[in-house]
Image (cartoon, rainbow, N blue to C red; front, side, top):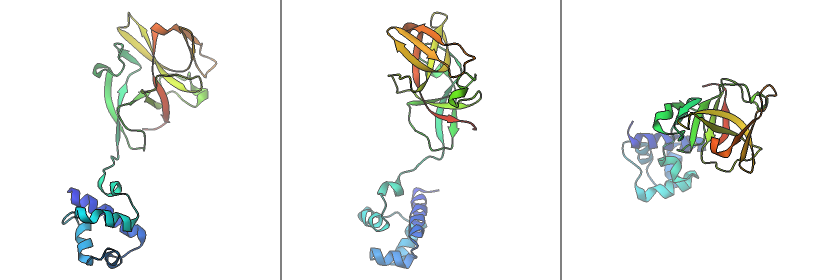
Amino acid sequence: MKQTEKIGKKLRKFRKNKGWTLKKMSEKLGLHWTTIQAWEKGKYGIPSTKVDKVCKVLGISPSLLFEEKPDKITYPYVEGIFSGTAVLASKNISKNINIKEILPTGADFMLIKVESDSMKNAGILKGDWVVVDISVVDPHIKNIYVVAIFYDKEIKGELTLKKIEKVGSTVILIPSNAEYDIQVYHKSEVQVVGKVVRVLRAL
């Protein structure tokens, strides 16, 4: 579909939302109704000199007509076990997963699958997927974080999902399931990857 056709479809939708006929809208713009019809069919684009007036009449922002919003959002997916200390290095990303929901977009998010029920009392179950904001660098006990635990001389690591408490150089990982133990590490042994911002139960 051509860009003019995409814009035309949006224009028609906004006109219909107002309950206006082509003639009604043309009267408001001081144009012939066939001109509006040609825009809506994508025969040619709305002239730049008319864009502001069209949007003002419809009561919309120009971005609603011209910006494309993806119906899918792609997140890099990292397995529970990763290689290297940089979790989001290309070698650690197993695949990119498309999600049709309205979620935060951008390179500051990743997706992981929950492999245990250590956070079940926080509403995060085994088999769920979590969207992780990796721009977060200041952990707080009220939030749930993905943490990378290093082993094998930091060549390989493991991702875990826990609440965090920091005491000096000590990092305490706190599960919400009493069947799991609290884990204590030196800050050099772990890396806070990011904060969980959404839990998905079905993909």
